[in-house]
Amino acid sequence: KVFAAWKWDVGISVSACLIGVGAIIIAVICYKKDSELQRQKEEAASELQKVEEYA
Image (cartoon, rainbow, N blue to C red; front, side, top):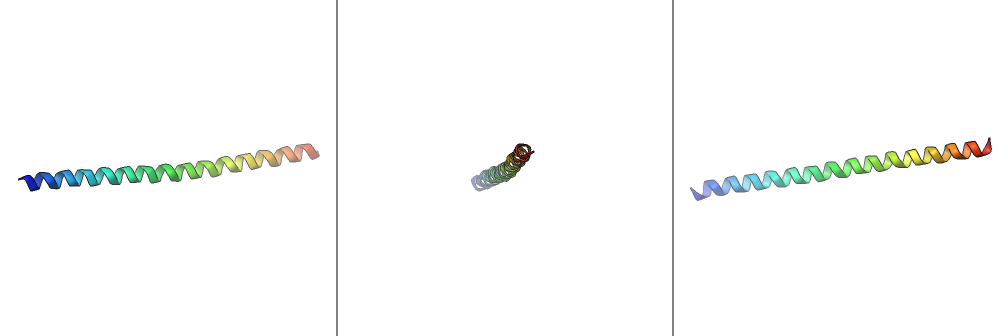
């Protein structure tokens, strides 16, 4: 009887850990994509400013 409860506890704990790790990985991927997009926007704005200065 105790062993059955122990299996449930371990199963729930492992599931919670996997969900947590998955959430962290998703957050890191989204952050990297957002950083890359922000960098591209800054480069485009800088390039546009250079073009306007020469015109």
